[in-house]
Length: 343
Image (tube, rainbow, N blue to C red; front, side):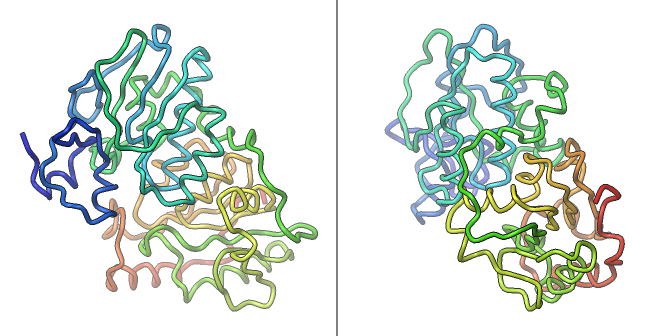
């Protein structure tokens, strides 16, 4: 059955073209190509898709795991998704992964997979034609995981583990903290001297970002608490703040700056997942997502859940009314209570 444009965009899985190629709807959307003429990949070609049918699999009998559209096109989702894959590999070291990914993934996310490839296996761009599975091969489709009901219900790491066919409780919490980031070969931060604290105020959507009007106030809170230079990404008018954007041209540099920080202040962004990987003490602000769905397994993260029940569950928004609510919530925050007791 052919999908219409709306169904193709929201299909909980990957797409199959008329000539049998597996396609990412993200690639079609970003390239402004027509999304008509495609079918849902579904459970054909030997694929498992937990959004369509829950499954459990014994990885002791698997040698090759093929993952389609894993693990999304956002940096934070990808960090956690890779954590799930490597946690599985820690239990079953004999398996290897082939991950087929959207060709038009943002370059900064592609760079993450390039860094992780030696730990994972092969990373291949879509589209691709795949025949029937061979013996010892497990095929899993992660296409459009934002549209899967469990994505909004489970902690993200548990969502990915569940979608890989394992019970989330079978993976210990210590393997859910992105510590694989410590194994990456990263550059030394450019032109650093001494300790610094880090402010990462911008998320992938305005509804999760720190309002521009409040960023200097947060920089001041960091300065008052630590008495250390404040660094970050983006312009902020504060005497002790340095914008690292010119010194962070790629994802390895971005990760390295977070690794070197004494403390991180951030909303719900990829930065907090990177900080968890290096055990960096962090304060994280949440506006639309329950903190437990993102940072449950991060012992060094202090969560500030802003009282915004009207916005709960929203993944993206730039609506003026939403942003005004968020700005008022930040204004009402007590800046002396931002930090965890471990700082």
